[in-house]
Amino acid sequence: MTGTGRPAVDWLAPPRGTATIPRGTLVEDPDSGRVGVLQDVTAYVPPWHGDRRPRLLAFVRPVGGGREWTAPPERLRPLGRAGER
Image (tube, rainbow, N blue to C red; front, side):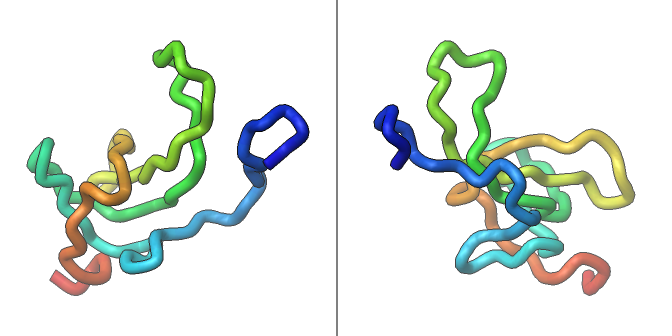
């Protein structure tokens, strides 16, 4: 925690996965039905929300490239390492 009562966030931390899903894993987002490669899990403040507190978000890139999307990391389901399918 910082002196302001907010959690200390390392904004320059290297990309990482979760405790159970490493970065680079092929994942499915069951809510959207999309499949992609986990790029990072980090504390993030979405600009479109009024609540300015950082929350944990997973950044996922579609297989073959394209626009990343975000999802709560606990929602993702691992399918294996990218390129193993």
